Length: 324
Image (cartoon, rainbow, N blue to C red; front, top):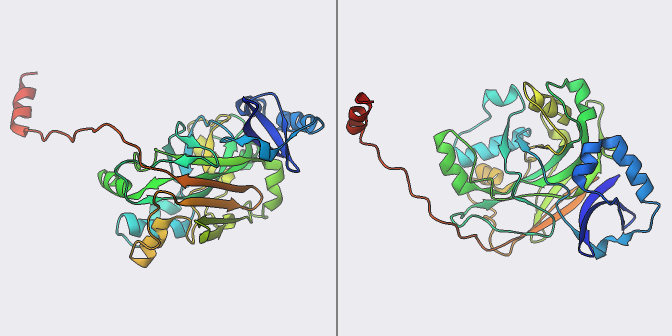
């Protein structure tokens, strides 16, 4: 089943997309996620029996407002290329193979398909990142890999927009990424429920699903989800270890290889080719079994200046400390 969040007639609601029509569920996606996948499927089956509206007559929004976004890095080819581009180092560190690493990114800067995305004012190396994300539909803590599939509600496309020049500077502090990442991400165009997406699952738990990205109509990268280093079930189990996952949490697959982002290609080629994204560029990502999302790069946003750190006077600091 395909579940979307959309605006029609001034009202925002969740609905079922079926055969080019959208059928209202008269609730929010958050309410569907809280009810769980079985209840959502029952509600969706009832909704498609009612009259819908053509999908061309509605405005699709991001399918959900995530509670949290954990973005993993599960494609070895991506790690190798981007490490060379960002750090100047060759190869993949051994620590990557130990566990599905992730970072938390910003749930408050989510865009939907069709939106214009504005990069940071200081950014000169704007990049896209093609990913697929699992949406959590059931709470759990320290979930086993065998049980993790029952906690996944569905899947959507994720573009983890990246300001590579800002990321490169801030990660010299061995912290982050932060402002090189948190200005924008895109989710959409909808959520394909786990029962439907499972048709692409292989015997070893991966998904044989093609993923591609175009800039201004030219294909830049193409890969398969089957090349992930870990399954989504393993990712959810690891995310929940000594912690919790809850309905509305999003788990990004990490960027696919073979041109899933520009930085990977820059690292392999030793030059910024293709060029970084610029104003007016149109980025389209397509994932088999889900659909496509498209965003246009807008003008950089203007933000207030934050001063650099003051240079400490160590002698003065020691003297001050001695009197405390």
